[in-house]
Image 1 (cartoon, one colour):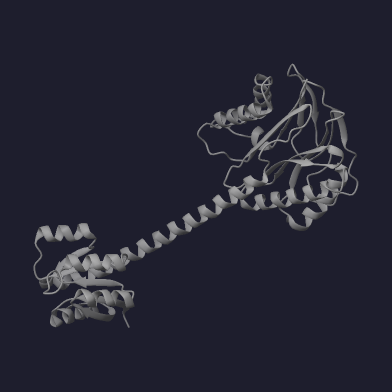
Image 2 (cartoon, one colour):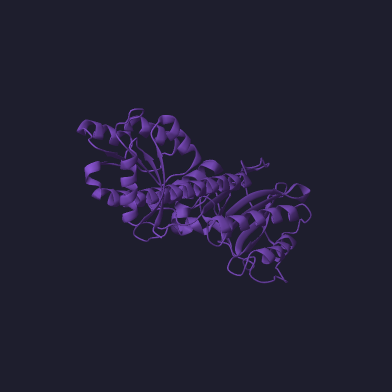
Amino acid sequence: MGQPLRILIVEDSESDAKLAEYELRRGGFDVQSHVVSTAPELTEALGTTLWDIILCDHSMPALDSAAALRIAKARQPEVPFIIVSGSLPEAAAAQAMLLGAQDYLCKDNLARLVPAVKRELQDAAERRARRQAEQALSAQAEEMRIGREIQQRLFPASAPALAGFDLAGASFPATATGGDYFDYIPMLEGRLGLVVGDVTGHGLGPALIMADARAILRTLARSFSDIREILIHTNDLLREDIGWDRFLTVFFGRLCPVTRQLAFLNAGHPPGIVLARDGTVVRELQSTLPALGIFPITDAPAPVTIPLEPGQLLLLLTDGVLEATAPDSEQFGCDRVLEVVRAHQTRSAADIVAALNAAVHAHIQSQTQSDDITIVIVKSLP
């Protein structure tokens, strides 16, 4: 048995049709053929069977190759169309190729028929594979677009109004979705939770873990005012879901607008930084317990409580800011972060976030962002 071939022959000469079939069988094809010679017959054949290739005579009493080609391309546009004619003027051949014919042959030289059919079958297979790959990429891109849109809705649309403070935050994923997280969480007694987190890696997997962590933290903050309790329970729940190869660093602060105090725990996250009005570093809010999701936490320390004096600024980041790398492999680093913040410290929290993000992207220049970037600024107003 040869290679199966479903061939539609548009031909008014029975002998010419049989000769074409003979050449194809002799060339190794197992031919299943159907012969038509009018437009209605062609239309019906194209509506009932998916063909591998179409052979068409140029000139027939009821149909010519140009009309047949238009019918075929309207109904089965991907099927190769080869014109086989006793004589085909050069202008007609050029017009046929413009209309979408793949090749044309003379009936007195059917030695070209088998190689032409094999070539067109191969080209058609490659076109189908390319189209399928493009469709798969398009579908994947659409899925990622939807994922990004959903994730962006999980981030705060804007900072809450909090007496005595100006707050702003933003997250910029390295891919369509990211593993960074920031949030403002309403807490008991009118306090506000400030959260910045980073799941190892970036992409869809970390984004799902981030969404899980967000839901857990928000739920627990409705029932607990103690940051220590919230993070211990979050760690227990994440360890059931997160897998051995992932973990979450998180800075969780509880801001009190009445006392202007910040209580915090830092679970393996880059230090928060408190700047004085003149830009000097007042304090670095170092890690106080391990990252979440790795092993049980049974004895977490009490939250650290610090004042945020009028004029001071709290800066919270993920490591995507600090480790953003220039083409010469130099990282952005903490010194550049402080330089940018100090240069814009008199401006709004939102302006500082924007300026810092712009500076990071200027540093990496035209390179692709390699990690998610998240920035939160809290200004204690005079």
